[in-house]
Length: 463
Image (spheres, rainbow, N blue to C red):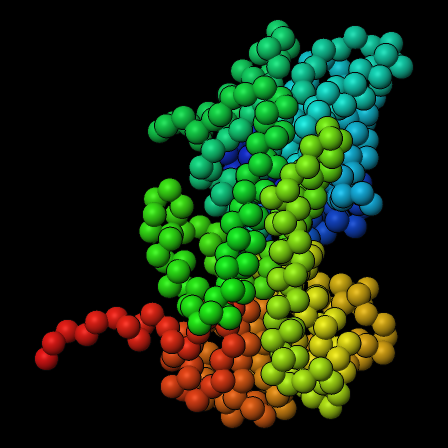
C-alpha cells in the first residue's frame, strides 16, 4: 500500500518506519530541510531504541523515503497520515495550526480518493475541522475529489515505541458511516491486517470517540501516577513504605501494577499537554474535570519534592555546596527533556546557590540545549556536564537520582561513597532498598520510603 506520513517527529518517524517494515511503500514528508537531510544521510533526529535499524533497513530496501516535496507526498499516498505536533497553546488547549496546515496542503494537491488519517493527538472535533479545511481547499480549486477523515490515535511509549507499534495491545480507528467513511474503514482494515492475524486488536468507533479515547487513556495513566505520588508524600510522614503498599494494592487484578510507581513526577510530550488539553475541552463545554485539575496540581508539586528534600537536609542556603544529578531525560531510553522533572530540580538548587554536575546516558546534548534556554549564562556556568556517572560525583555533597536508567540500578556503592563528600543519596525513582542502603553506610532519602522496609518483616525459615 502507498502511504504518506506528514511529519517526521516521534510519532511520524516511528509510524512510517514500522509501516515500511510491513512491506508498505512509505513517503515521509517534513518541511524541516535539516531534518530531512539528516534522515537521508542515515541519521535519526530522536533517540528511540531500535528505530535506527528499522529506518536503515527500509531505506536500503527502497520502501522508505524522506522529502520536503509537498506535492509529491500528496500524489504518493492513498493514505495520508497527519503526524505533526500539537503543542499546548497559551490557554492549555492543543494548537492545531500544523494539523490544519497539513490538511490544507493535501486539499491543495490531491487528485482522486484519499484517506486522511489523524495520527496526531487531537481534541474532540478535530476530524471535522480537518474535513472542513480539505473541502475549503478543494472548493477554491473547483475540484470535486472525494476523501474521508479517519482518527487513528497513537499509543506509543517513548523508549519502547517500535515494540509498541509492531506488537500493539489495541488499534483504535474512528470513522463516519458515510459511503466514503466505510471505504476508508475498509482501507484501514487492510492496512492493519498484519496485526490482527492471531486475534482482533482493532476497536472500531465513531470519529469523536476515537479522538476522546487517546486523551482518556493518557489522563487515566497520569491520574495513577499522581495518586501514588500523593500517597508517597503522606507515607514519608507516617512511616510507611510506599513500595510495600504498591505491591499490596497492585496485586488486586482490578488495580494492577502499571503506573503505580512513586517518583519525581511525570513529564514528556504527552501526559502534561494531554491532561491540559482535556481540561480545556471540558471548560469549552462548561464542564469542570475536578480530578484532572488535581492530577495536574499534584504533578506540579511533585516536581519540587526532590529539591525540597535536599533543602531540608542541607539548609535553604546552598552557597558553596555542590551536588551530583544522575538522569536528565523525563524517562529512560529517550533524550526527551520536555517537562522533565530534572529541569525543575536544577532550577531549585541553583536558586538556592548550589553548583551542579549533571549526567545522563543519552540526553546530554538535548540537556545542554534546553538548560541554555531555561537558565541565564551565569546560572548555566554553575552547571558542569559530566562525562560519566562517577565523574559527576567528584566533590559533591550528595547524589540526586532523577531518571531510572538501567545503568544506575547496580552501581559500585563503595566508589560512590569514596567520591561523595557525604554518603547521602536522594533517590527520586526508588531504585534502591532503604534498609540495604543504610547497612551500606548511606543516608538514603527515597520517595515515600521509610528505612523500616517490608523486607525487614519477611519471615525467615526456621533453622
